[in-house]
Amino acid sequence: MALCAGILLASGCRSVGDEPISGRSAVEAVYSVDELKRDFVQFRSIMDNKTARLYTDRDRLRKALNEAEAGLTRPMGELEFYRLLAPLVAELRCGHSFLSVSRGTERFMRDEALLFPLSVRILEDKLFVIRDGYGTGVAPGSELVSVNGRTATDIIRTLVSTVPTDGADRGRPRYDSERWFASMYYAYIDPAESFEVAYVAPGGTGLSEAKLPGARDPALAKTAKGVIFDTLGAPYSMTVHEQYAILRIPVFSYGDSRAYDKFLKDSFVEIAGRNLGTLILDVRGNYGGSPDITAELFKYLIREPTAFFSNDNPFYLARWKRPIAPAPEAFGGRLYVLMDEAGFSMSGFLLSLLKYHGIGTLVGAPSSGGYQCSDASMETTLRETGLRLRYSTQVFGTAVSGQEAGIGVQPDLRVDWTLQDYLGDGDPALAAALRSAGIRR
Image (cartoon, rainbow, N blue to C red; front, side, top):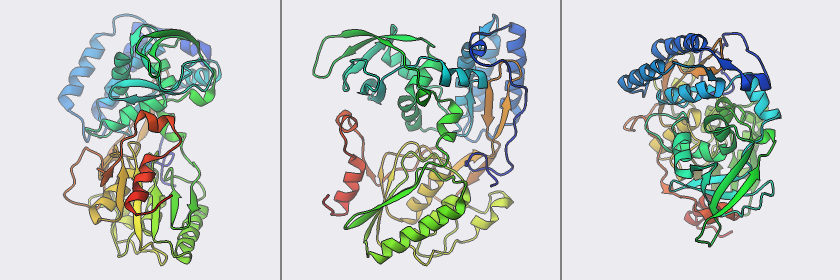
């Protein structure tokens, strides 16, 4: 595939630089001012000269880079340096550009680090527990007021300022911060081994306090790169009900494209054979993928030949600039598309096309990406610290007009999850789609 880990690219990926020390030593290493400055020069050269900067406020970025460079006056560990650079990468306003910790620190996080043990969600700038998977005793539904003396408000503000996202979007920073809170707290706030929390229990008014042991679990460890790349190959599925079918496509990147193509064809043949008038397409959590995988689904949703990419895209996308013919088994009934803030890159592209052509009803939360983004990403390892910088180099867009750049696609039927939704086992977006279709579960 002409892709890197399934995200829209053209020219492939490469990694530059030697891997530094590994394991615990990578976490504990302290780098001299000269070493940090050498890495910063390498970092800044890329930021200034090689990034696409589609949605970047260049004056603001330049000022931030100058301030960061002036602050390199004392030795730092990897994580402290990481916390200095990550917000600068976020200033690119590009969901395909992000900074990850070194390979050694990533291994330590997966194998040895003790991470925050509670699953959380961010609602109205407050932090709530939705699951106590490690038996700490903090009840789901509790509001976390502080962690290790730092207010939840300050923690949220710090985390969301580091998450890469396209343009003016604010949904994905919250989405990623709450779902990967444990590893982001470790990398951006404090690599603590235990956590003193102040919280308000469900239905309570006063503060309770508890000291929580950290959890050693590789499932909690996630780098900025891993947030997207670890979803590759997530299984697709279709479930058939009496009046409708649910088609779940959690990513647009699969190593066995023939199996994926067969799955789609078989699914739509079955939908037609059962004479199902309603299809729920669930692309929530889908950060994107490759053009061929996405366009293969697109041809089952259109009713007339339709171009995917606009003519001003690079030449190697010519196949999808020409109108794509609908599949013989293309769906002609009522389509509902479940979407959320993860949707950018190819996922945002698909949503932009569906919105533009009035195909189906979009249900859920606004996507983080829209009709235009930058990718063709490259990756460089900073030579001294081993921090890994990924950055986009080219601009891509779909064959639409009249849509605003730099914001996600807006749903036709917006559904915002509540705390009770997260605590229960329901799915309010799916329920809203079924109600709209007049279907009782």
